[in-house]
Image (cartoon, rainbow, N blue to C red; front, side, top):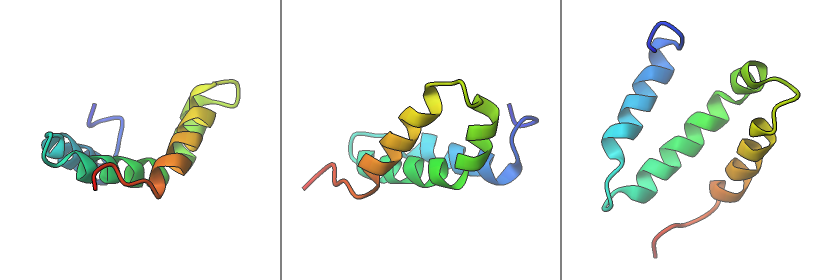
Length: 71
């Protein structure tokens, strides 16, 4: 996997995976949204124009970007 993505996105993904706990769920979600935003151009290129996945991810980013999971 690390041969297909660069060192920086791989580090960000590793950081997210280490953050996914019930107590740090919101922090993991924020990091995930930030990574998706940062890599959105690459994701769009990789998924292609015919894919339904990219429009779904764009909507997910839009909805979660300002969302608060916990109070």
